Length: 162
Image 1 (cartoon, rainbow, N blue to C red):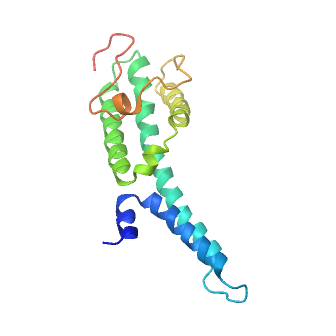
Image 2 (image 1 turned 90 degrees about the vertical axis):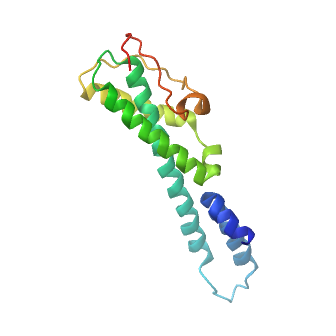
Image 3 (image 1 turned 90 degrees about the horizontal axis):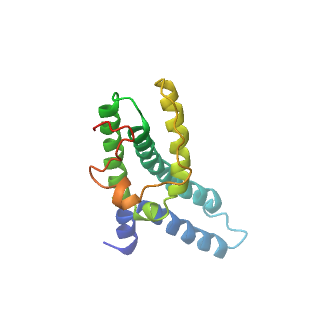
């Protein structure tokens, strides 16, 4: 297996970046009168594939993180179990995707994910007819020790058991 195939299998997003760079160099070295392949648009399409994978990955931890404040702050004992089941599904999917593309995980914007999750939580609790608590503006959770840790959920501030 050659280096590029290994990179492709280890981290698709990193592979798209490497391939775009190779195409950039090849396009720059091509004489102006040689149309060759459409390097500029091909580069953009390859990079867009990597960005698409990155966006899909970001939605998983965002959905997971959005469930954590509901579990912590909600005074309602229902729908607590469905929230936990959904959060676990998003956590598992996020961990699997992170294994498929380590470069995505390394570049994860936890502050941005937390900001998106805060909006989702506020909207979701309002739909459920619950008072929206004063949610922290900075993510209080650690990615490895809590957010992606199997079975971790925050305690409930109203003493409701999981």
